[in-house]
Image (cartoon, rainbow, N blue to C red; front, side):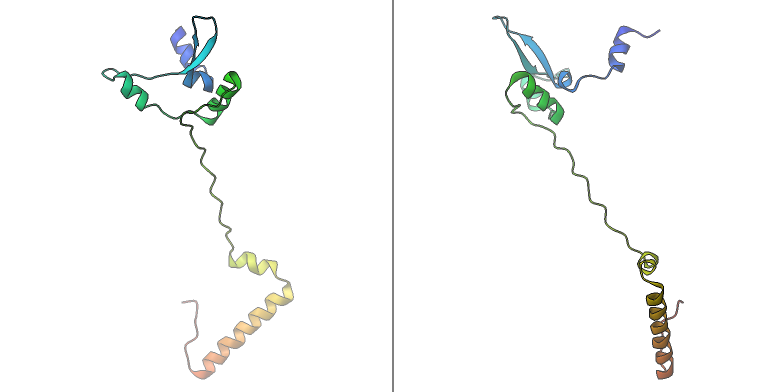
Length: 126
């Protein structure tokens, strides 16, 4: 059997509720405060210094509910790294026309033969 506390832990929390809590003021109005996580042996000042930045989504919800922008630290979303284009010999050759591929191969074979006649070492696949 699942307890109520376990059910609350399984339910996905609202990003706004994760970082802020509503506080009822004596005049009847409701304001929102930042939630503090105080570990045993930690003072209130230390807990306020160790506040983690809020998500962009929570800051946007704060602005919607209060009408004022959140002035604390907001997490920056990492920018996706651009993927470098990979070009292989097979791809570049396949893009050429058949006639152009044959001409390049013929030129390469003539260069190889010319180097052999000069007595130099041609680059082989070894």
